[in-house]
Structures are given as structure tokens and as C-alpha cells.
Amino acid sequence: MTIVPERLLLNGRLNKCGVISPRFDVGVKEIEGWTAKLLPSRQVSSSAIVHCLKLQIQFGYIVLTTSAGIMDHEEARRKNVGGKVLGFFY
Image: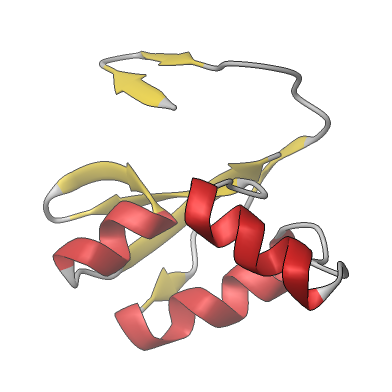
């Protein structure tokens, strides 16, 4: 996924997307909980999970607006910033 100002370039299919309103405040420690609520279940075998982690396969994204700009949940965790949930897609 590449975020370009005012555009989002996707590789592959878009199955579902949604907007979250009102914009909930989310701390860094709460991001995983929102991921579990909004993104599809990761109900696969443990060997498949290991394979996905090695290839860094994503199961979807939560889009946040933070003090450091608009970013997905993975980047927010890496930068250790929280923000407001804008929406999700997978």
C-alpha cells in the first residue's frame, strides 16, 4: 500500500471498506483491539500464520489521523503514535 496525498494506490482486490464516525481517539496500546474489531479474523493454521508473517502479508488496514499525519495502523505502531480512527479497508 502506498499513501499519496489525496490518493491511495492498492495492489489487488478491495473486499470491504468503511468509515468510522464519530472519530474515536485511539492510543498506541489500543490499536490492536481496533484491529481485532474491524479487520477480518485471522483464523488460519499456525503454519500459515508463520508463512504470512515471513512474507509480511497484511489482512487489511485501519487508517488513522495522527499528529504525524495520516497513516495506517502498522505505521502508527512503528512510530509509537496514536490518533483518531478514520476508517478501514481489506
